[in-house]
Length: 209
Image (tube, rainbow, N blue to C red; front, top):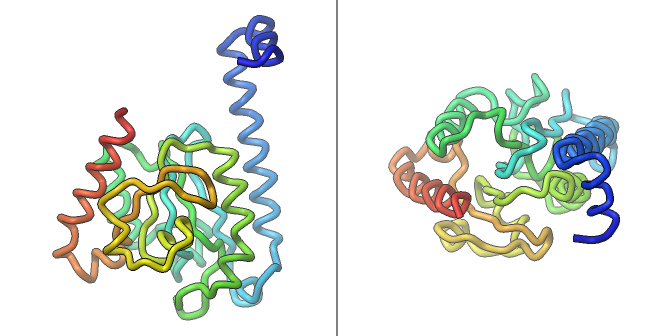
């Protein structure tokens, strides 16, 4: 522990210091949200209805990251809503959390037209926002939902089937990352739900350490 931190802990007390840290994180995320909502770095800013920065607990030890907002998210400005959001809520509950106890966001913050996959330049344009979110929150674990989120976080071209079922270290962000199937994919391929549950159990085991 450095001298400055030790001095502060002695001066204001541990609980007050923790509350001050939370306030700093809340301020950082609020400022970042304004920047994201005003962003015009890529073509998606021209076609979006609403920006979807992300939402959740500023004390979250678990961050859930998808690829991009869809049509429903574009309408309301919140991540993972609609049918896929309802399935994600069940997955979160199965891990022992409530939705407001985790933080949920996407690789890109605006909906690609017709729900196409985000292009590489769009991912790059948004990467600084995601990096700042991760730096502010400092989660214990990140779960990447779907191929694009997994490949982006791990800086790889490997297929999702080769990435899931283990904990990786993100070379870009220096955080543990678990990759699994996107809820929308599981709605189309319900036979993969068992594999996704095995991934979530691995996440629970890691978080319990």
